[in-house]
Structures are given as structure tokens and as C-alpha cells.
Amino acid sequence: MTRHEEQGGTGGRVGRRPKALRIAGLTLAGTLVLGAAAAGWVYWHLNANITSVDINGALGDDRPARAVTGPAATAPADASPLPTGSLNILVLGSDSRDGTANAELGGGDDTSGARSDTAMVVHVDAGRTTATVVSIPRDTLVTRPSCPLASGGTAAPAHGAMFNSAYSVGGPVCAVKTAESLTGVRMDHYLEIDFSGFARLVDALGGVDVTTGQDIDDDKSHLHLEAGTHHLDGKRALALARTRHGIGDGSDLGRIGLQQTLVKALLERIGDAGLLTDPARLYQAADAVTAGLTTDTGLDSLGELIGLGRSLRGLTADRMRTVTMPVVTAPSDPNRVIPEQPGADRLWTSLR
Image (cartoon, rainbow, N blue to C red):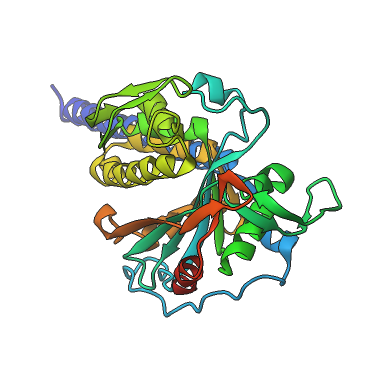
């Protein structure tokens, strides 16, 4: 073999290596492009899931004062500063996006139309490591203020109206205005979770463990549980959140206790589910939450929701206190309640 042939042969072998590297490089580049496209689609999809309402624009300045925001919390050098300061969020559970979810996911009352069966004011203390969750019984009689309507015009004020009628009359805007009128507390944000979205979230987390102190036998919610600890899927967790006829005196107060137990169990499950190490489960949970979520415009993007979540990363179930607004039976109707004074005012004052 001549030297030229040796060099040619050697050259051929060397030539194949750059070609193989080019193929590998193109494959890697293609994978990265596809991965980036997939990530972009996921972000767009989750963002598009969220429905928002301009609460601030609708209500203007005739509202309780905002809480004073403290200095930003310490964050990693490459991250934006995390907000601190107390925060009040009105959280509603409703069937507003799909009225048929009532029958498909555990039933409940046979009332048509969108309604808010669950109302909680979540107060996060300054530093955002402890929280108080205050449940407002939906049967509380209140003075519902005049509310702007999405269709134009305003709804007239109503005295002795049920608290949850505000949502039926004027949607999230009226619900926030009525909550602020009742409590004197500025609602910094609004979060509404659709019942079907709640059930999907529980399923995405693999279910939740809940302990009940008494038997539950409710044909309306299709829930039958013996006292004890149970692992509930989304459908049964939703039924637990909505049941009231099979516990206590059948009032909304018994249901509130179950809802508060469920909230803590769900927070514990979120902390234990290992979402950050399981991308598929993380996506399922995020898709479930955002698909059933309505927020104010301050939380209407995935980035804003993630920022809120990061600022609450120190909040765990054992640092959350659950209470119910003090109430007494309404003199005008034994099936309704009114705020008990001065206890209710003292509670709301502590959250301002």
C-alpha cells in the first residue's frame, strides 16, 4: 500500500467521525428544539386554561385599604425578590364552569345555575409562613351591596340576603364586594376553583387521606363513609366537601368542618406528592388546577401563580389555622345564621 493510499484510508476514517458528530449534533439540536416547543406549548396551554376577572377595574377605589407590604423576602441570587407582607385571598368553590358537574361528581343540592358552595378568606401573615383560613357559612344573612354586573348596569342592594347569593347575582365581582362589605377586609386576590377541577386535582395527586370523626351517610352527595381514615379519590373528595345532610344537624356548619379537614389534607398531599421530581404528575396537577381556575387579573398568568406559590413555600399544613366566622341563628329564619358580635368583628379586625 502506498503512503498516499494509507493517508487516503486514514483520511476516510477521520472523515466518517465528523459526519457522525454532525448527525449526533443535528439529532441533539432537533431534540432541544422539540423539547423547547413542547415546553412552550405546555406553558401556553396552562396559561390559556386560566380565566380571569378584572376585580380592581370593576370595583374602583371604594374598598377597604390595602395591607402594608413589607420588604422583599430573601431569594436566590438569580431569582426575582419574593413579596412579603400579609395577604388576604377570597377563595370560592363553585360549579360555575359546568353545572352538570353537580350530578357527575358527587351531586349536592338540586339547584340549577352557577353558585358558590364554599367560601373561605385565606389570610397569610407577614412573612408568609403562617395562615388563617376563615370559612364563611353560605347561609349567612348579609346586606349585599350594590354590585356592577358583567352585562352592564348594577344590581340593587339587598338586605337579609344569603351570602352566596352575591355570586349568583353578580359573579366574582359581587362576591368580592360582598365579602369586603361583610368583613371590612381588603381582598388582595380572588381564586375560584371549579368543582370538576378540584376533583381532577385530587386525582392528579393520587388521592388524599382524610379522617372523619363520625359516620357519613348522605344520599344526596352519594357519600357513605364509616368513621375513621379513608383514602379518597377526586369524586369522593368532592362529595366530602359538599356533603351536609348526613352529618350533624344537616346545616352548612357541619360541612364547613369537613371542608377545613380536607383543605389541610390536600395541602399535606401537595407537600408529599413529589411533584417537582415527577414532571408527568406535575403537569397533570397544573392542568387540573388551571383548567378549573378563575382569578383576578393579578394572578391570571402562570408566572404570577408560580410567584405566589414560591412566596408561600414556607407555609405547611401545621402552620395553617382553620376557623369559622362566629355566627348565631338568625331571628328571622331558624335555617339561616348571622354574624355573632362582637366575636365576628374581632376576628376580621385581626386580619386587617
